[in-house]
Length: 220
Image (cartoon, rainbow, N blue to C red; front, top):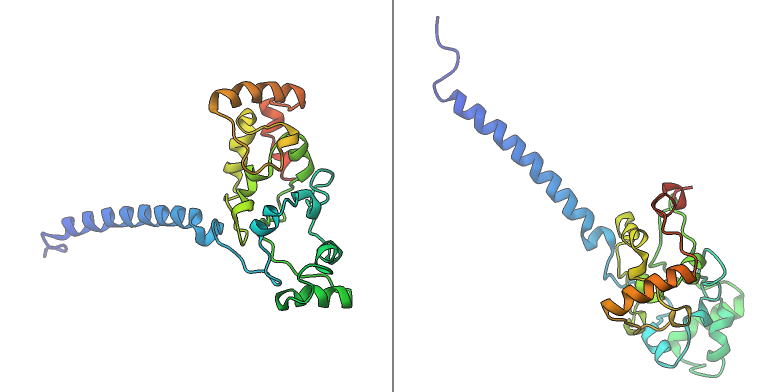
């Protein structure tokens, strides 16, 4: 009976199988890298706004975050400033600047400005802004140094793993409530460990693993 397979067939089969496993592994690595890339996470990707708005410029004037984001301490949503908030200043300052024409048009027509969301969570995630602020989590912890951003970009991935890093050990991130909007706030590792433990008790942060890591907290 004639030989069905040539002498080198076994080698070819082994190479093909090994190549298949290597290719599958490579696809998994590539997929993981893509999922963590700025292309997907949009980390450090600045988004243009109309009208152009510089957080860096406005914070340099001493404007507190809560002047525009009025419900940051009281609601699940920090709030987007209405046109009236802009016009409180810009009816007198830069009142005729061409770049602020969209603001004047919005004020005249009553149509709200259309801001482009930067920190936009999926609909299957529930996030309460006020609870984090009132438990001592500062603006910069999640949003980065917006006081240095001419155009705001996403500083962190907002992935579940990133959130859980804080939920597992909130003492590393908690600060005094009167320092929430202080963008350059910093404490040494030793100071933060002691202060964090103190504030966890003071602000009644529940560090029980079941409560802090329960899926229901964010997926309702």
